[in-house]
Length: 71
Image 1 (cartoon, rainbow, N blue to C red):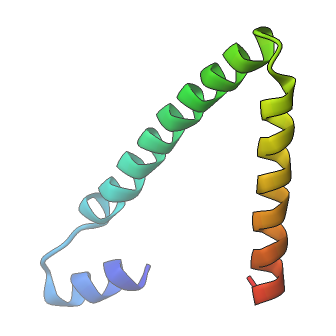
Image 2: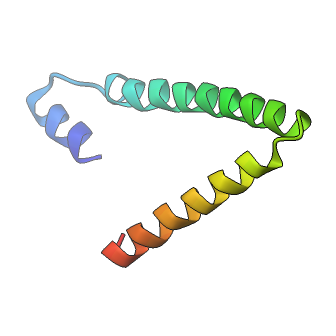
Image 3: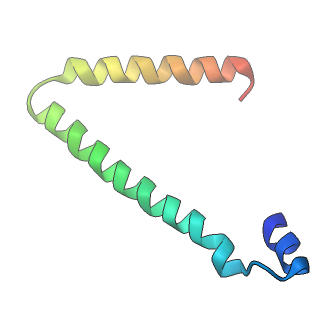
């Protein structure tokens, strides 16, 4: 909201033009999520559960490390 407020004082940016990058990012994140789910579903249907286990371990390690850093 600070961007919109600062832009409104100068009169150059509207809320719609400031929100567009966020909506575009949300749309691309949604599409990336669909692709990732399709990929994961193909792995699991092919019986490669060990890859899912490795993914879970790596994700847990990354989250643990970020938590250790204070995020």
